[in-house]
Length: 233
Image 1 (cartoon, rainbow, N blue to C red):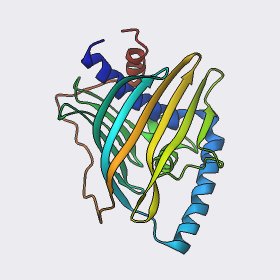
Image 2 (cartoon, rainbow, N blue to C red; image 1 turned 30 degrees about the vertical axis):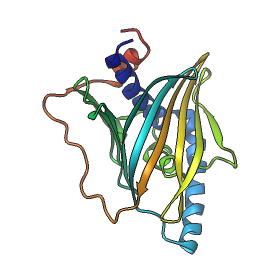
Image 3 (spheres, helix red, strand yellow; image 1 turned 120 degrees about the horizontal axis):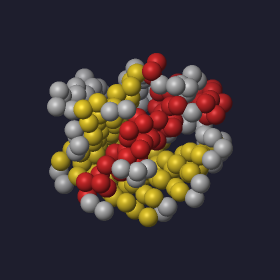
Image 4 (cartoon, rainbow, N blue to C red; image 1 turned 90 degrees about the vertical axis):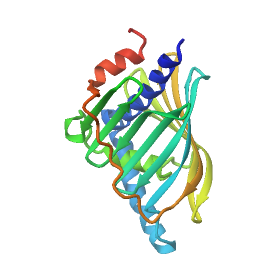
């Protein structure tokens, strides 16, 4: 399999993980529980200390199918609470892709193939009760895991999503995830994305880091990306 195809697989895995987190009707209850837990966590944090507002760091992202590594790439993470989550993937010093999630939209930028998907939350199906807040809770290490390291959320009769916190660290004396995993389980197939962070910092601000998509990029639909990911092309 070519490096180009492997890079595409890694970028598409990010998209599908995002789509599942935001678009599944059967996950609504889990999202509502997450919102309740987040409120309790915020109250506790207020008593102890002000929660982090911004975090930046280096990222190692590994795409894995059925327990076997498909590709590992470097990159970075930049997050502003209630503002933005931005993951950048770098392969041989070149940025090949970017996942950007804000309260208004989701953007997946495939720089390697000059294409992108940008969807407003209002245009995504089945987003009520889930959306940006649930994703933010997971990436900030605040998703309610019910006392467990991993939590499996049924998405349909044959597909489920497993969320796992594998390692923790501290940023400015606040607990923060160091290594996380999102796994799509479909029949006998397991597609996992592993996020491992280093050099984590808490800057005072990020500035405006929202991505502007150039005119040379082609907009594609989620259905086209999923078809490519499934190997039918």
